[in-house]
Length: 144
Image 1 (cartoon, rainbow, N blue to C red):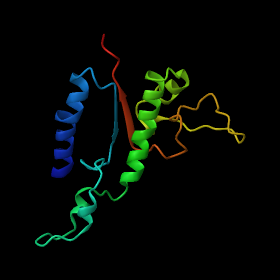
Image 2 (tube, rainbow, N blue to C red; image 1 turned 45 degrees about the horizontal axis):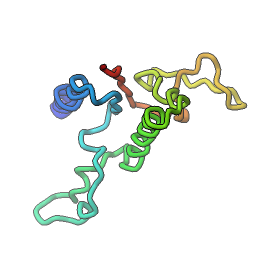
Image 3 (cartoon, rainbow, N blue to C red; image 1 turned 60 degrees about the vertical axis):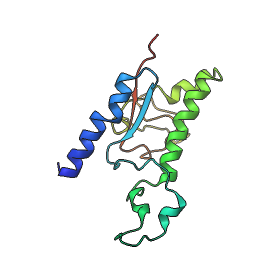
Image 4 (spheres, rainbow, N blue to C red; image 1 turned 135 degrees about the vertical axis):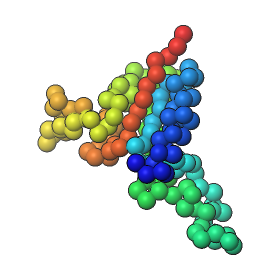
């Protein structure tokens, strides 16, 4: 691991994920194994303008070579919709979007030509083949 990836590892395990483990308020935590920190944050419109004294535009602080903000927000919206649909609306069909294998890369995409799932299908519900690569959804049971 490089120094920067060690730092990201350190920040992840001693930072955000610590809150997930300690607080009973968070029940789901979505992360991406290759995403650089702070990339889920929306970039302010001003960040696209060059700034004197900087080698690059501030937007690069928010940008990622692979994951754009729109895609990341769509992923977050997917899980937020499922969670609130179940918890607030009582829609039990939303549970299938939350009861998924923790690491998407470990899932098996097995769909028949007619669109029905084969018994060995364990890929994330609501995601097309390869669209959840690198994602992880951790779940913490609700504490009473």
